[in-house]
Structures are given as structure tokens and as C-alpha cells.
Amino acid sequence: MAVLLLAEVVNGQLATDAVAKALTAVAPLGEVHVLVAGQGGDAAAAEAATLSGVSKVLFASDHGYCHTLAEPVADLIVSLAGAYSHIASAGTSDAKNILPRVAALLDVMVISEVTAVIDAETFERPIYAGNAIQTVKSTDPVKVMTIRTAGFDAAGMGGSAAVETIGTAGNAGLSEWIEDKVAASDRPELTSASVVVSGGRGVGSEADFALIEKLADKLNAAVGASRAAVDSGYAPNDWQVGQTGKVVAPDLYVAVGISGAIQHLAGMKDSKIIVAINKDEEAPIFQVADFGLVADLFDAVPELTGKI
Image (cartoon, rainbow, N blue to C red; front, side, top):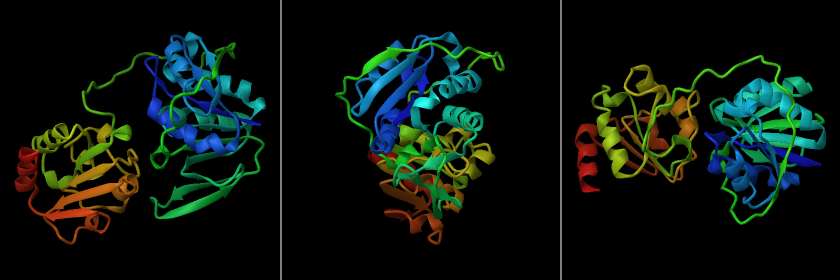
């Protein structure tokens, strides 16, 4: 049996990093077919075909699949499910909206946030804010799962899979796209950035969060925030890193004014190098940091920014 991998497509462009990492995760399970859904996704389908390890790209070119509405895309996946032993996607917001519906329609469980594939029936996923790893064994005829891509390397390019245009499953009209409201930014996307600079409650105010942004801009980094900073109004919700925010694993993670609550650590502890700046030498963040600086962030961050 083969694996159906739902591709993340944004404005007609393939989310290459997320798809390539999810591909690495599911490649040991067998032949991988990538599903690209949505009118105008020709370029995304062509790019998916170049990923190493992809056997075939299925392209559903229908406007009804644009904006990845859960209902029509789930119906499409269910119509294809009979040929697959596994249905997977990177654990993006869209996938977490679509795949639980697919699982319900197929009357199987959904296995979320998979961090390791042991064999065709056995998977690992974090629980208790990442403090324990749960091993899940599923005997469902079809395994439906989302992949936490932070722990996987991206598959390489150089493939030459065929692109096959497929029919549509029809649209029941249960939902309708109205508009997207997207904040434009020149910074890298948080979940795929190689460097992330995050600020916490210790930054003190929304105005002072500019210190974090200046340092991030010098490092060509994405900007993150702890839940405490977001709840205090210092940073927008989509910057939140942690158990209830985004999970990141960059090459470098700089935590400024972040104490290191367990919920925040769950979202960034897989970072390759962690640097912490905090004036409290007892802060839990220092227990996971590779480099720690006990200093007032209002002195240290401007000096660091100026010296880069």
C-alpha cells in the first residue's frame, strides 16, 4: 500500500519546507503520493514532483479546493483513501482542520503530532507538554496522522515524479471562503526559520518589544513570544511559541526575558542551540539553554544588537 501526503499550498505556492520534512517522516512507510488540491496549483504540483522520494503527484485542479476548506478537501481525500494505508500531512493549521474530519468520515482515529515512525502501525507523539513520549499502535485499516515536522530533516530535491490530474469529489457547499486577513512581513516564517528571537513577559511592554524585533532583524530571524507576552498584549497571537502556540526547532533560538515555563519549553526545546538572556539566574530557561547570560535585557539586547 502507498502513503497519501496532503501538501500545504499557500497562494498557489508549495510550502516546500513543511512538505519536504513530512515526506522524510513518511518515506519509510512505502510509496508516497503527494496530493495538491486547488485551482492554480500547477506550480506547486510541479515543485512537489521534484522532491526526492515522491512517486506520484495527484493534482486536483478545482476552485472548490482553494483556501483549503476542510469539507471539500476532506471529501476529496476520503474518495481516494481506498488506495492508501496511510494519510498524512505536516501538522499545519490547515491539516489540523482537515485530517480529523477525514478520520471521522473513515471511522478511524487521528494520530496527531507524530514525532517518530517506528513501523507501519507504531508511532511516537509527545504528551504532557512534551514531558513524556507516547507510543501509539494503531490497527485501523487507514492511519490518519499529522507530522510534527520540527524534528525531521527536509527531503532533498532532484526527483522527477509524474503529475496526474484527478477528478473532483464534488462540493456539498457546507462551507464558503469569504476572505483571508494576513499580516504581511519581510521576516522569515516562524515555524521554518533557522533563527528565532523570542521575548517574554520580562520585556515589559509592547513598545519595548521593539528591542526584540531589532535584534531579530539583525539576525535575519523570525520573532517569537511566550504566552505571557502575548496575553499581556506585547506581541500578536501568531508569534506565540509553546504548547498552545507554534512548535519550532531552529538552528538558533534566543530567549529574551523568558522564564522558561514548561508550556513554552514544549514549543522550542528541540532547537539546536538555545541562548537565554534573563536577569534571574534561577530561571528555568537556563536548565535547557546551551548559553546563558544573566543580565538586564535592556542593557544586554541593545549592546548585542549594536555589535552584530
